[in-house]
Length: 111
Image (cartoon, rainbow, N blue to C red; front, side, top):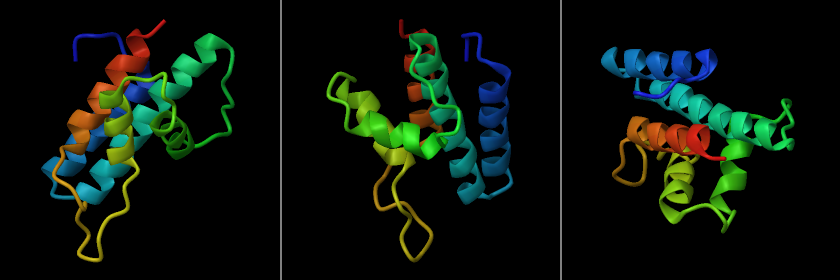
């Protein structure tokens, strides 16, 4: 990414890539979700609305139902909180890392 990421977000994205490289898609999804959620939290903090006790999952849930957020960002956020199937797969075709990067870019650039 060519933007300056707060260290915790950048670290989570790197961990997501590493987990995927090691064949652990579940762990990659967890790290991607954290990165995106923390980017939303970072934006919320800049707006004066943050609650640091909220989970990354909670921030993503809020975005999915916020009609003021562009549809592609809501969609990417919803992908990050989808429940996996009993076969440990996502029920849709998507790249969770790309979804996380999209959400991160949007919220770190938003103001």
